[in-house]
Image 1 (cartoon, rainbow, N blue to C red):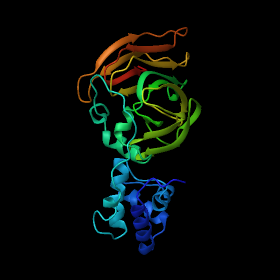
Image 2: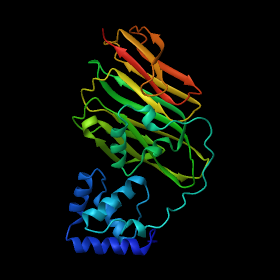
Image 3: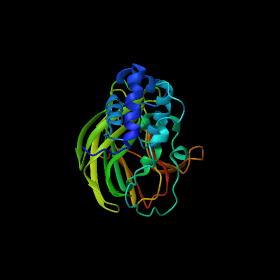
Image 4: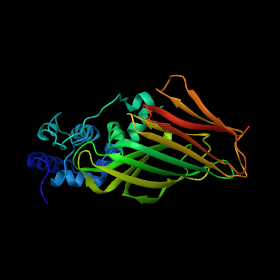
Length: 302
C-alpha cells in the first residue's frame, strides 16, 4: 500500500503511543471525551502511514493527541506537512450561506459530523443540483420513513462520498438505511443529546470535477417520531427542490403548509397551505431555482 503521509509523522505517532503505554481503544475513548473523536481503525491507519489526518476535525484530534500522549504542543502537527491537493475544483457560482446561518443549534450538527470525520463545509459538496425528499407519516401521526433522491455534481476530482444530516425528535434506536441506488451506506453516527444524525454514503465510483451522478436512498426512523414538521437546508442555489409528505388517509392533519426561512432567526415565510381529503392525502412543496435557506412543511392535528 502506498504511504500517504510523511513517514516522520506516522513514526513519531507510533513511538509516542508506545511510550504512553495506552492502547488504541483507550486513546480513542480519551479523544471522544475531548469532543475530538477518532476511531480505533483511523488511529491505526495514522500510525502505520496508511492514511493521514487532513480535515479540520482530524487536525484538532492530533492536537488533542499531543496532550493525551504527553507530547509538547505542535510535536505531531508540525510533522504533517501541507494538505494533499484534492484535484481540480469547479467554480461555485451564486450566493452561498454557511451551515450555522441556516441550522438551528449548529453546534450539534458539527458534533455529529465530527463523528464521521467530516466538517460542516462537506454538507455543501458535492453540489445538490436537484433534490426530492419524500416523507411518510403513519396512522398515529408519527414520521415513519423518508426517501431522498439527488442529482449531484462533483466539485473536485476524486469525489467519493457525501454526507446527509437529519434530526429526529428522539433516538430510542438508530434509524436504518433501507435501500440505496448509486451509493452505499458507510458510517452512521449521532449526537444523541440533540438527536442529530449524520450518515456517510460512498458513491458507487469516484467522480471527476463537474461530473454528474444520481443517488437515492431510504431511511426508516425509530418508532414514535412526534415532530410536526419536515425540513431541508440548502446552502447554495439549486435547480429545483421537492418536499413531499404522504399521510395515512385515516389520520389526516387539520392544517398543512410549506414554508421558507432564509436564515435562522429571520421570519418564516408561510407558503402553499393545503386541505386534505381521503382521496388526496399527499402534499408536495415544490420550488424551482431555490435560493439558500431552510425549506420545510409544517402540519397540525387540531
